[in-house]
Length: 264
Length: 279
Image (cartoon, rainbow over all chains, first blue to last red; front, side, top):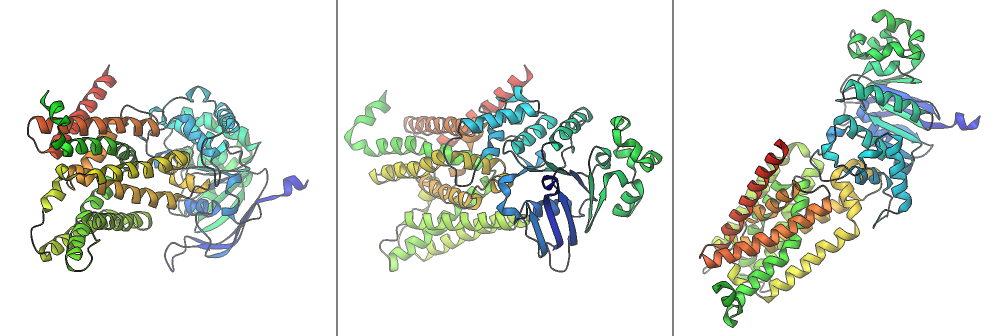
């Protein structure tokens, strides 16, 4: 099936550093095929956000080659959906939920009003995220979990083939988090989802790949990812229980992660 | 009412111009003020307004020695725009030292202006620039204000969605193909122009108050960027007109009268909101 085999993201020998002589990412090579979803994990300062910014084309590799859909990332931005962390945004900004989601329909060289189709896509994205009733609400009066969902709806409004989520479970309460995992599983059937997370519990979910970023990048099949692998990435004992959640027990993949169970 | 009576007298043209410029400038004030408040660049606007004095000083000096066309207005525009662009570029490319650079530009441009004023022969009414001299307004300022309003309003209507996206989420706007840097620097230039024009009305010192207070008041009662702009335009207009009438009636300096009124309404708005949230 050529559809499945199609490569979404391909990095070969990519290096990047913000300051001369200090590499944030060093000789990184991996690829992700269509239909597979991954979780980008690693310690703070390990280069997770840098990798994300490279994939978005906001930064360019200093060495090596990075392709998204076989092209330069900045050329395919219209096919990529991006969700930032909500606390990076000004909470007091005067904007409604619908206006935020419509931003996902912004096109190059486009000025004037959004058309009927844009409004329909925005409404559909809001319904997909289960927050259709929030449409007219002010963004600033929403809870953290609701804001996160609005920002995912905004990313979905553009009908992306690749969805990049930056720390989607940071600062949201466990109830909202559980809901979020369910949503993510539905989205994974429609598009390739890459999630940045410092939360190792996330890895246990129905995710295909674990992309460990700590200057070097190693990629693991999620089924084979264990506490020991995690320790290698973080260079110290990782407490998986601390990051884990009650819902872990319901996770179908539990049995393929025996070492995770031992860690508990 | 003696104010209305005086307003009609032919020799009171300056009063009519003052009211007209004040009311007309509220469009520029409301839109630019909203951008300054929501993008949190009021210290940038502060540096810009004080930097205008640098340009004014240099222009007065140059006008005297060589360049008759170099009016204080031209100088103020050059001073304010150059400062806004320098601070804006620093804000964009070297965030960590932003506050230092803002203060350096603020002080340096002002000092240059005062040095030039020192070398300029004859009497210079520099207090007029610091506190505004609404008596000096003429028909020219009326036309300039209308021009500035259009210069700000038309791009805002055309590119509203892009401007909204850029103001709310810079990175996302960039990813969606919005030319964020072009819009950002255009907004800085328009902010500088608005500030220069408003210096005539309230002066360098108080212009930031008049730019930010109506928008800050409007911000707590609106949930769209456009409605915040609209409400702060209405509020600016009210503050300027009512403040001018009060200053005429009670023989007060106009700039402080306007700013005290705007501050009082802002504080009342804060109080009302706190009360509303408790209920």
